[in-house]
Image (cartoon, rainbow, N blue to C red; front, top):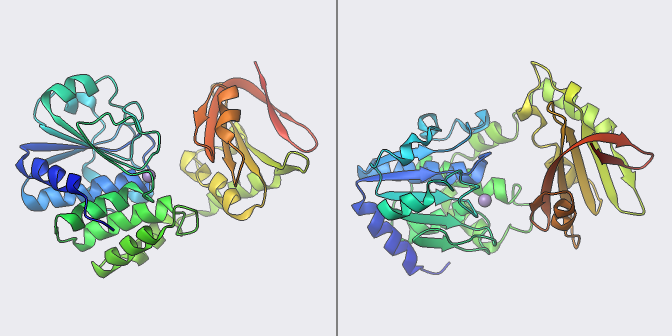
Length: 322
Ligand SMILES: [Mn+2]
């Protein structure tokens, strides 16, 4: 990993800050939370005032990471005039960060810094540390600490390792680069609590969620000609015991274990919408399919949402627009 001069500039700006606002993206995952949690810990240690913002509440499984109990979702933090530095982590654009209506005024009052690895990043910050070749934003934050000779404590290491494991699918997907493994190795040397990460992130399924997964897996259909595997999550699958968080991960599970070109999970929402999640293994650009349905995303992972009803056919589930 090569020294990056931009990391030095960001360090100087943050060290001089009166107050830093750290922003995670909507529907927060282990990468955006890991990165902002590690940066928060460092700010606290340096005596820099710090606030973490995320539009959506953090999923329960990440609450073992340092400082996550202090995250706020009240957009009033953008107007309180306190923060002179805003650091946005893992967000390709300001809408995804939930700050699109604040970004222009923020940029006049504060220095906006952006750590990200999405190839589509618009570079909306004053300083943008964007590297599409990086496995995760946590890898970039790790490099930020290393380049500035910041001592990484156990808490920071645990947070950053969480992001690395999230975005590399436990070192199994193509984001698993030499640099990613090198960063993980450095984090383990700093005392990252690997066991805690495993227990909280992966061995966390309740009997209720696995039963729900069982129902969803039993509906799996495979169209050999199209190479499309599809299944559905029905509104009735969810009750008081099974919530959104139980459903999460079914697509990832199929993507990891099923050999199909495209995996589509349709979900019946209570408001009459159907939400679709599309994954492809190789060579198929699912974002084009998603765009046809009024959605978007990446080559290998995309989604859409439309008013419709789910129709069952022999080899495939499909949506009929209503
Ligand atoms: Mn990420």
